[in-house]
Length: 566
Ligand code: SF4
Image 1 (spheres, rainbow, N blue to C red):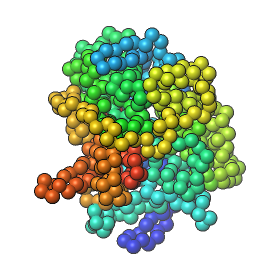
Image 2: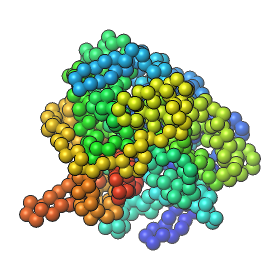
Image 3: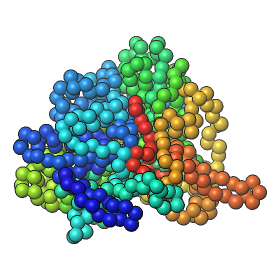
Image 4: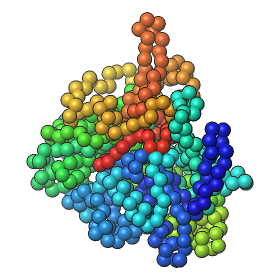
């Protein structure tokens, strides 16, 4: 690495140069960085590699179910158990239930893609933190607390040459505080973007280089998840299955999604509800649905006597093969959730993300071996490797899956059945989402739903916690005196058109209670109040706002959730 100095208005903006830069400290980037270091060593290449992560620690922003198919991990670290991989539990058996309002019915067969026996239940934050230590041990320069704020391009204005990290110490009023630190320009011959779903830098690249041109629209889901401490004697003490999935209640058959409960060690469970963001009812409240799920008699029985010890939320991309971007541009590659690398029918994205990072690493080594050709053509070898891998087979098999489960009513079962019978082709290939949900804004007018959807919840503060307690349990922190990272472009649109048409759905789809509608007692004037410090970085608002009026930007590096066991 080498460092240079460049003057900015307020300070010196440092430049650091590396051979390869990974943006984002999730499983895709970390597996990629580890594989790259090992490959480089075996080929006699001496590479300077860096990885930046916006969370305060590696793993702080990682949240997932999570059942890990170890296929990629075995390739990356064959003796992972001996190396201390933090496995919570091995999956003993799978159970799959259809929930009605008060009852549960076990589905007599678990779809083959959801057979998880022998796979590992993990805490993604612990797992990623372990990968981070391995990467560091191999010589990767790991920088947590640094958010990539801007993509840097070369003189041709299209070759990616690195990223600029965000400034620190900027006040709410955009002025520099005494502790101001200018962001750094991290330059690299190759930059890998592994920001996860709805990455800000990926969107910027997409706007400039049109990497999603000709692709089907992405499909997003939001998951809310908790880790619950159970009493010593609990459902899992002698249960046959410790990997439980549900569908039906509370979402019904018109909104796709479902629930999961996985057994962790030390009498803990990981419990969550995932909701497809193509839902139409503007009164749907993601958090209330999550609580309804927990209150279902069957689920309640599994977690009775428990105490929530961590909570969080994040968005997942499930659009599949036909929503994948171009995998390479000049100087840049896309891995993991950024590149739609998820096996939707299996409900798994960790092993697919890891493998994508590893394939990208192989392409990079090849480019160095070719004498340093980092053009799109050369880095595009990653695409070839992908096409010939088990990863492609998995993702291609699920190419129409989310679109099939998004069908409304009983026809959904016909489409899902066809998926299994035809190896993923379904009734027709390249299936769009349900007709009503094709547009980016599938919400219907609020007046067509004017009924009280939810009863007032009684939270006991232990097993059932309200949104704000949930934010507290996510250990989310933001420095208060900084510019708001949630940009509401036109507040008048919120208080007039959006209020009238959709009843301000941001106050319901945000699981962090960031958006609040305030009405002045005297003047009756309405105002949208923002609590950006509560933000869980799930990105739901950036996706689900019906007018595209909200843009999520990255706050100061190190801010956000502080997951440790999620
Ligand atoms: Fe998620 Fe947006 Fe709410 Fe933050 S403000 S928690 S990104 S919906």
